[in-house]
Length: 391
Image (tube, rainbow, N blue to C red; front, side, top):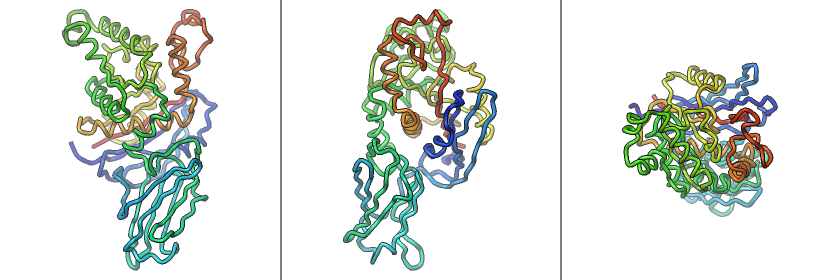
């Protein structure tokens, strides 16, 4: 496989026409790529209405998801409504703040020393941990340090670091998830397993594999079980396992891939709704337009049970060496999803306490009988779609 990533995109798909796309456009400018990548195009969110119409705004940008370019060490602190960055300027012969260029948007930062000839980049990133208010950014020189103060868009969110990275995401996800488990679904059992392991390691969660649990319970491999009793038997058994672990917290659960798994069947999602679900979707699309269309059709058709997932990460190809990068994409998308509605983790907890009755996301009062309304219903709310492709 080639070592470059050709493009990536991010957008909302929604079946709720009351959602404000203006708000989501300003809050979801991010993408996650493997290291040392080339140019890519970043798409703003679009809304898919009941009649299928869409609106899409496109911008071009060029960056790579490596650590920010930094020639000096920095110190970072979060002071509730503001974050502060201190950069060491020793040896740069900086006389005043006029010798410094600080360029910001709501999600990016570039700081350069204006040296004669070519400016020196001190730090540059397109992935601030969360949004800032660019117009309220101030900076000054304090002895041999440049001090930059940023006003946070969300004063309640604690920033572990100035940028979004694997380390800051794993540190910051604790305050957002509030113990909610994460379920990895999709056609590949291997991908689900590898990514779940990385997420569990990063978050300090318990790694669980329904494949391993099934094989321990039955004392046979899943393949031999399929041959002996068929896919319906395996799906039913995995559904029972999902029920038994649905009340667990702080778990990263890898589910079986394919139609023999419970997550591949719409009527088996009752206990998957207990946690945040991520669909790891492989794609054969060779360009951004066809991948976008593929995702749109999947969600609109609703025939794939995986479209019930809270977050979708689409992958072009697979290499287990990059499982951590895919895990980072999952956490990044989950972060944005929860920031768009901070009540979601509490709502998941309530869903569990009421018995995982299949009424997600419109939770009914205690005593509700799912049979009274024709069974389970899939989610009708927003979900994040993150396309992560490699050519």
